[in-house]
Image (tube, rainbow, N blue to C red):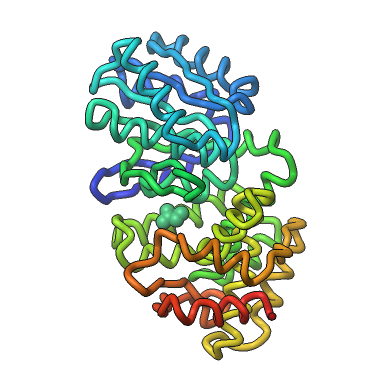
Length: 349
Ligand code: GLY
């Protein structure tokens, strides 16, 4: 089993091994025995893994119940969080009990946020069932929901107490979902680990790839948990990607939008003279390996309008993560007034 320890405001392990889901009951009983658990999941994941997880917990005498909400970005809302909180209150969960997020990024973010605010904070575990959640969103404690069409507008930093990652579950992912997770892996390679791109191409085992990605994220989160500096590097492809998601009303998955956003970041950086020429082709080639899209079809005006509401804007400025080369990304602070021009460079218009 691979174990990556994160030590920030909380200390916790990320455990990675094929078949780990069937051992979840044992792991949870031995680390968090005596507690009562509420598994939160969505209606895509529940039919696949909920019964198995309940049986694994039951087998160890661990008390658990479950709450299932409809899948999709449109349910990443305060309303879903309120329903979870009402369920926990009705079932008399207390601060010494715990939640388990069983699912992808949306389930993890919603569950983490409910955990952060229920009775001023209860513990939670992450069991990611998508590559995207495994390599990114289940680690680092960013939790939250969308509000009024604005992405992750409400939330909290609330670290999980453990991340249990079973790469075998990714076998049931639709191809598009698997590829979406690989967009985040490409992002890590582009930020600071160019050799990871070669390892992906060589078909390295997904457990090792996940361990590498979460170790990169762990190191960054340990230095900047509250996202005031270096952690913003992890937004490579996300600032443009979120604009694509907003402008297209989520026509693309989050990972697909990140792939498009990463290509845009490289195009902009090359045009600005920040990044050496030709690197964007490396990103496009990696995206092609997984059938990831590289352009959104959105106009400059549509993307600019979407970016105006980005929560990363501070005063009249926004910080973008832009590459100097593939594997070397830096933070680039710019005036909102310059954004229109940068966006033109990003989409080559
Ligand atoms: N997903 C980017 C971060 O956790 O900072």
